[in-house]
Length: 498
Image (tube, rainbow, N blue to C red; front, side, top):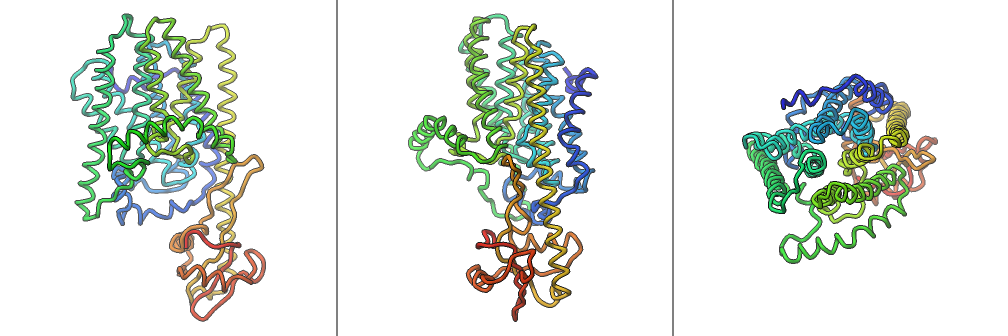
């Protein structure tokens, strides 16, 4: 089957996906905001930070200029194509058992999943996360052509190039690869393969998936090293530092992994119960729901089809979905790191719809609409918080420039104190203010908006001592001039990034 054929869906699919996109991202499209990472284009790309960190493909797409609306709109087009491709793969390997409604559920839930909001709140990363999804989907298509359709091996090798490139944008692509490949294995056993699969065939199938993953990781690493040497950069171990185990001894590492795996469920639930971030809690609850549901459906389908291998694939999918937790040895990750859960959760709901009795599917549809409604609510809250955060940053900048009355051209500025976040009543928190970050970021923020200032860093204890009796912005007295610099006090307490 041609790749383009997987993108063909009925009109109802595109209408529902478009409505979800508009309700989820409409506010962000028309309300521009600048995040601190949006100010780092020169540092990330022209000074090689991305290449040093192994994210070389991001530099290829760096020329997708960060223009308000246009950049986000382009990212959404790519995201829609990626979701249509994933849906096409589900339809193909389920022999159309995933009907149009199931595919609509999958795409609408995945594209509105709250973990994605962090990427789209940043102009810079919105296109990166979208192309990361698309490249991963294309890679899975080509690898599936070899692994499942038994076509020529060059299909699989081409697929590893796409997966390796996706990993070099965000490392989470390898998690999506494993999750989706095992999902396709599960679907094939349910709908395509009639006879029982022998253990030997299972091991060969899993072995091929692992081998292509290793090749993709090698491509990512080797090309990254090539870019680093080409530009004369020192090689750093940014991605390797995600590994939360001591690798000096293989037996000790294996023992640590087993120990963490045993402790993980308890630690994960403890983190969930103490979470004050509603979006983070929502993501954790969806992970638990997807785990329980896929575990139960694995048992049900195994019994119904009389194939134990279906349950085995469901377990492999679940373990893969928690891959980043297991790799980093962390029971809690920041929301943006669990973007892979969008695929996991969306598939679990759409699989439930597919296997449940037709007479009660309407209940699943109603619940799915409610889920999308809740997710779009969270997404819009994040975008609104980021917009309000940006407007406050603008207000701080303009009032500082006004109150300095030209003094910023005479002396450098020193920022004291930290400014608080904006928080919704239900726990949704804004991104940190631009003035929370290092002095050079604050200077870039001023320069982006047409103000030439010099923001410097001096010893934190000296700043705190001199600013101790000053008022905080926006009250009078938040600016004080000294012989060598001007202190601007934005809040109480020491600065984390000075």
